[in-house]
Image (tube, rainbow, N blue to C red; front, top):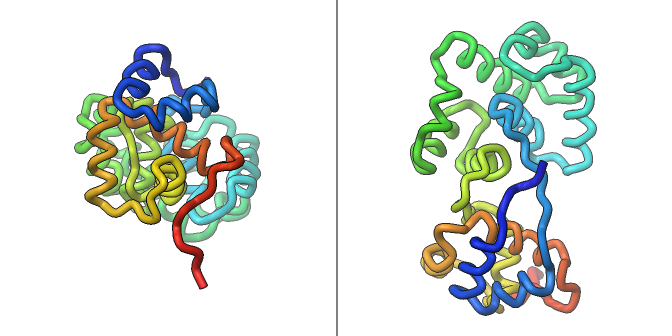
Length: 212
């Protein structure tokens, strides 16, 4: 299952931003997987923090094989020690079990997140241990498929923006200018910035000054 977008979003972005329109024409459709299970998505994102994508995939596969369904009940049944045995750090295992306890007890209204605005959902999710603003934004995009997520805290997005618009640096005011221009389809723009940052247009380089 991939993030859903189509002609409406593409037409809007190409009309608003000719440079991004060039990217869209050259790259074509971008397929990024989404997981509509909000509980599992929170756990998955906590697991993936500060480790490689490959390591995250390996650990996530182990979790699914070991627990079957990833929900509050199976996480609490497993406990911190068993989660650690699957390759999760002690701290992350504590964050995940704390999240499961809050959901199971009703302290954290997980289903209520779906009804919130982006700002409120980010605030609520980032109140959880181990979930910062960036992680909350990624959950909104790759689980909830919110249409207007463009994260200033994502280094690859900033790199992609530098490469597309040929800026040596994207500071907050400049970022906000582009975010406003690309709204209400910032999530689709994000997909293309990530693609460019990952080398989708090989001859485009990052104009940021090289670190010495």
